[in-house]
Image (tube, rainbow, N blue to C red; front, side, top):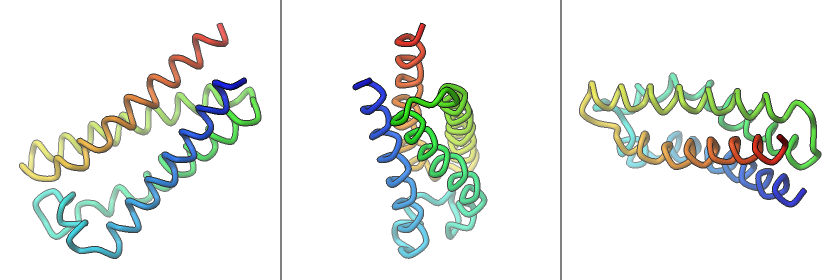
Length: 127
C-alpha cells in the first residue's frame, strides 16, 4: 500500500509540474524561447492539448487510481507511458530537425524514465 501512495504522490507532482511549465510558457517569452524549436515558440502550442489531457489529467487520474487502489490504474499507467513516450520522441525529433529545443526533450526524459520505472515496479508488485 505504501508503494501505491508514493506513486500517487509522484503522479500528482508530475501533473502540477507540467501545468506549471505550461503556465510559464504562456506568460514568459524568455522561458518560451528556451524551449522553442528555432522559432518564436509557435511550434510548442500544438503540444498543449495533448500535454493537458495526457500529462496533466492522465497523471492526476493515475495518481487518484494509485491512492485509492483502483483496478483501472494499471491500464491508465500504460496509456500515460505511451503518451509520454510519444511526446518525448516527437520533441526529440523536432529538436533534431530544427537544431533547437533540446531543453524540452531533456526535461521530459527523466519524467518518462521515472514513469516507466514506476509502472514496471507496480506491475512487479502485483504479479
